[in-house]
Length: 293
Ligand code: NGF
Image (cartoon, rainbow, N blue to C red; front, side):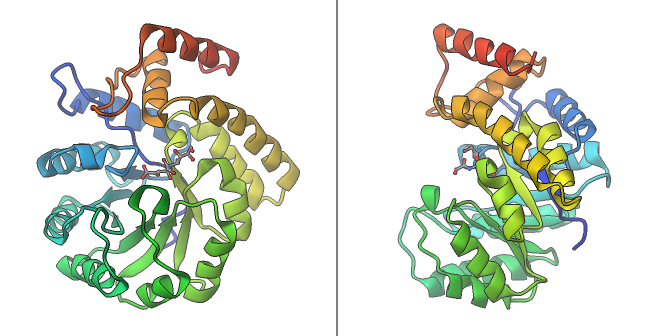
């Protein structure tokens, strides 16, 4: 699974004037991000607003991206859903469409025990011949899946890794230590990308790579070249932007930066924050200060 490494944007989903997925802007954005160093794409996750889209839309987006990317970089389809049936349906489609892998958050809203969560993942992985990357994001799902749970999960055929979105780097390291070297762990929180790589993450999947692909790609390169101080300087720089981003909903903020850069990605779907003119003006100042324009 050498192909899964590097900096992978959790793609913002571009919407057109009619509110649907924009074919042309999606292609434009994906091309641009590849030119900045994107090592793959992660679709319809939190950043991609997968939970605010219909099953058909999630499938449509995947088809557009795969068609545009061809085989240049791997495309990971997030198929996570509250219900197993939808996740299975999306997995079968992702396989047919030619995705490199699928990924799924732990099922949310209802409180399930570990056996049910395990069953959910096994049903997904058995649905089609495509590798699965589990997704731990307790801040949003409320999941309390433990290190031991992931150890067991890593032994299931076809489950190749975990996207770990928590700033608990010790827990991340414990998962890596328990699951073995072949189990891929992706860093989730972009603000600690370097910390995650240092602990052994194979790469990083995150939202701010939609707007800062190039510096993070350089951070990744420097880390692997053993230039830790230079990598740290970049992490500090990007974190100054993330600090500004965290004053807003991250999706609203990133969409506005992309719009200012000429990508008409549209507004996020409600109830995600809709920016006021004053907020747009503020983000414009941030964009200027941090040389996005
Ligand atoms: O939004 C969160 C919540 N995390 C994202 C990312 O891990 C989610 C992270 O990039 C993701 O990849 C996805 O599924 O779309 C943050 O937005 C970033 O580090 C700024 O805090 O924790």
